[in-house]
Amino acid sequence: MEKMLFRGVVTSIQPRIRVLRSFDRDSPSYLGYALTLLDATSGRTYSIGIGVGSQQKHQFRVGMTISGSCIAVLEPHLESVDYYRASKLKRLSESPEDRTSPPWRIAPPPISVYRSLSPRRLSEKAYEKACLSCIWGCRMAVEIITEEGPEEQRYRMETFCYGPATCKLYVKGIDMLDE
Image (tube, rainbow, N blue to C red):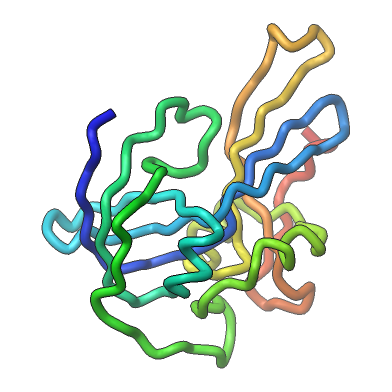
């Protein structure tokens, strides 16, 4: 596994969650956080999975410039990020927090807060347009076990919102039971 060095501006930090769905029951796995970066050199955008400890230590938020190393995800259908196993993380520049209105671009809360909340399906269009940089938005990798059995698994990405129900940017997404 070849390590990739990165340096870029954080454009998003959200929970990194994988869901196993069997019939109508969801079993989430809380893996840490997903950082989206705008690469300082190439101008390319990509996402990196970091652990809970790394976020607790560095308190990353939108606007910060950071660097480190990571490896490419081995099973992309099981991940919502492009890279993971980040190491040698460094904060290179700070950014002011903006707590005034959604989308919220502050350091995200501990994973235990996300666990305690009930996510709502979020429209993919709303996620891409307004919620991609919000700490309450989340793109989850979903593994679906069908009635035919585990050998007939399907994979997809779904978007959710953990934020306040009063958020003016929220647009309901398609519920899994409606599909």
